[in-house]
Every structure is written in C-alpha cells, then in structure tokens.
Length: 315
Image (cartoon, rainbow, N blue to C red; front, side, top):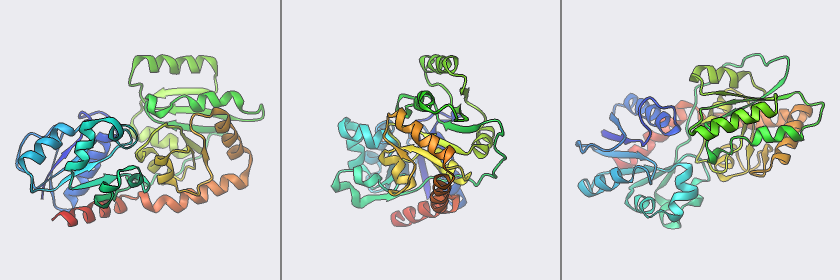
C-alpha cells in the first residue's frame, strides 16, 4: 500500500509524535509498504492515511476524507486527544467520525471514547528496543524523570516530593527533557537552586538519555494526561521500575494491579512511594516483577505485528 503518514511534529524534533511516526514508517516499510511522512497531506495519491493527533492533523484528515472517501483513514489518538480535545473540540470530534479505524496507545484508551467509536478502535502499544542495564551510581539512589517540560507532564512533582523525604533518604532526581517554553526552563533552574538533590539536564541525545535510564533504579512519570507514554516503554525495556501518577494512560500501560501508583499531583504521596521503593527491598522487587511482566507488550515485534494486523483489516 501507498500510505500517507501524517504527524503535526516537525522534522528533526524529538517530540513523541515525530518519534512514533518515524518508527511506524520504518516498520511499515519493512512490511513492504510505501510510506511518506508529512506534516500535512500534500494531496499525492495514497491507498491509506494514518494520521497522528485528531485535532492537530484535522485539516489533512478532512481533505483526505473528502478527496478519497472510499479509502482507509486511520486516526491515532494522543493523550491530549483522549483526555481533552475530543471532549470539547469540534474538529477532533469530526476526526473521530471520519476515521475508518482509530488507534489508541494503551489498553484502556477505548474506554474514554464515545461508545459508538469503540468497535473501530484498536490498541497498538508503542515499543522500545531493549537497553542493557548499567551499574547504578554508588553515591545516591538515582530517580530519573524523562519528559519535556510541559504543563501536561506535571514536570516538577518529583522535585517537590524531595521536601517530604526522610533525612535517611539518598534519593537524587535527574530530570531529562527539553523546555518547550522559556518560563519552564526558568522554573527548572529555580528548583535546582532551591534543592541540590534535583538536577535538570535538559534535552540529551537519545542514546545518552537511555544510558541514564538504564543505570537508574527508578523512573517517575508524573503526568496529568498521557496517551501511552513511550518513556514508559523505554523504562520497561531497560528493566527500570516506574512510579507513576494514577491516570488512565499510565494504568493502561502498567496494569490495573500495579503497585507503583500515586494520586496525581500529590507530592507527599509521591515521596512516600519513592522512599518505600528505596527502603523496602520486597516492595522494590514487586515493582520489578510487575514491570517485567509487561515488557513483552512493548517490544518492536509486538508493535509491528499490531500494525500488520490493523492494515490487514483495511486491505
């Protein structure tokens, strides 16, 4: 098939939508398809369209549905789609209606869709290549936060939790991710000045970020909304247990019975979870076992097979 793969994220950026688009393009080409990655559909003949983001890719979705009404149109829903835009934005709602198939990136995603759209929804877990474990830092219990500084990520919740740790704790926070606005960078620098246990390293090369993740005993994902975060996939692939905000996007990645959740926005509860992971070996082993049980869901092979199955329905 000739596939137009639409992502609103610009080339050479490291935003999640661009990473997903480039990974899917590679996987689909390996399956024999001809794939063009574009920010907006250029009108070239295509057998199918896969668009990431119901609202931000709506113009391309609308034009494709109008000009190619009999051809498959797949819309992939992000966290802001699922947990904000489809509830209030008319363009996102129309994208749902026009789609032949919908993709959600975690196993609870369909539950947040209107019932009339669930039958055409498929789950495609994102993937990460297995990362070799590295020796942890001997001087500290390093907790890594991976994610750009955006309001939806609640990026400084782990920094705020440091205040509530007991004196015996050796936890230090290493924060990886670029600031998408100048005020976010300033806030990160204020947190560093206020507490030397918090370090913001900014946006690193992906290989370097994976090295830090692979040496860290623990990762925190503190988001208010997630559509199925790739950093969780990377943590699972690196065998790094996760402490996560209790939101649908994280539960859909880690499982309903996972023991590493805390109430979203609650730094005191996050501090308790961090200290328990540091000080209670039994609890820490339980987190590792639970994450290990989910690792098979985030392999590249599993993701590619899910894409293959989806396209087989459309062929």
